[in-house]
Length: 437
Image 1: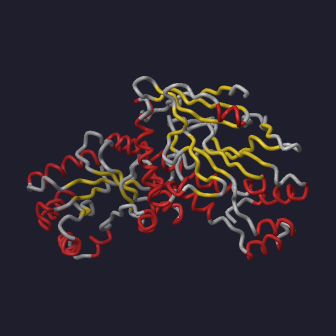
Image 2: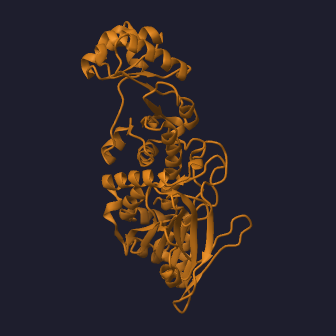
Image 3: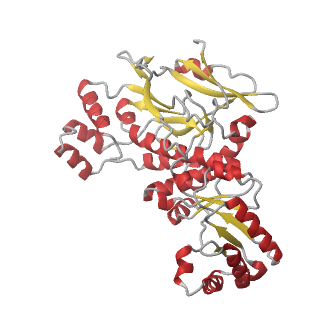
């Protein structure tokens, strides 16, 4: 039922007029990036595969749809046995992408592919938006870890998805226990200001936390007076204190002051973590500060200014009455689409730096058989083949593969891709017609 109504009204009409079983190819793509971003990150595939695997219409779902007049009996019969038996290809999760390229293709009958539109777009748009923001943050942080603390700033289910998407783009942990359990993500967190305020004084709070959680815990030092709190933290845990957290004020100046105090007290190995409404720009501004890790919340789970990727799901080819596949496209002003089968290749310089994304367009045999330019690589992989999910792309192992893929893909980009200023996409996109066989 994670489906928009018009998907089922189209299905109902197609079943009635006999076109529901036509073979179709739907394509996911986006026409643009946010002006301040030079690349996108494809994320959400692992989650999507789990959802498609369980995509069913229950008896109560169908009863509601009939009662509401959305479907008829023929449509109800079809939906009661619904299973996706087609093929889904697309970018590997974690791959970098650019506008006007085929990010995912869904091949099957019109009936089985059309009802997946909303599910596919809702997952990919959200997860890719979070992953794009997270990638800019981890790039700005360099070797210092970024940690997700955004669960309190978004919908409870979105928080779990955001934590996973952040890991795809290099985040090292999350405060969200549901995400930790589902995806085997390291969880982080010790205490908030409420724990300090609960006690009669700050020293009592620190002593209690150290007794319970150990000397390697992280103590929050900005409830009252930061320099004095750092001294109390070291008094509580000694030079084995794991870390202190700063959650307010001028983080760069405060981190330098805190580092100096820690070193004076012999706590040279104690780390400093900072939070407080961080984004990629704030992280970059702290490049020279003695900060060891960053906790990111609101800006991560809201896509740091771009909460969606504007991905769309369009029919680009379908069979005609004779069974032959024909390209189809819309010509709407400002929203055109490009019909036909497509294949996406990334081209590189001799130094291994990405220089161009090439989209080959044509009929399926020609596109599949086209000779790839030397040194390029095909970006599409199979996620579902004839209804069978590629197991390596799902679950905990799939998340690890996605994070590895992202590290590799981002590492192929020109250095200009990591600029935080506005600019054109880091890699241009060109289209070429595949020679007919």
